[in-house]
Image (cartoon, rainbow, N blue to C red; front, top):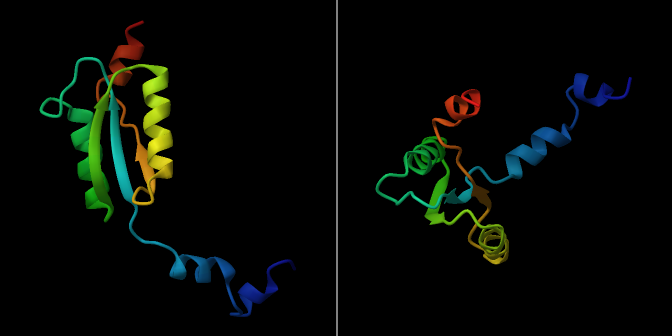
Length: 102
């Protein structure tokens, strides 16, 4: 059997990896919108709250215009930033209703 060592209680590489891995991600939450502000951005606030509840750190939130080059620049900047582990793009809480209305 391919994983006999796991059944015999041997060394489990997945368990070892998880034990040594990061438990907290440093996140950048980016809302893409031409109309939202930090004060009325429900999806960004909800995503940030859920990330924090899960034990992650929200390093910052940004609202950027719905422009391909701007989005690409933000992602590239986040990748280059050693202080960001994940970029989160929340979905509008009303998205399902908007798509269903087509």
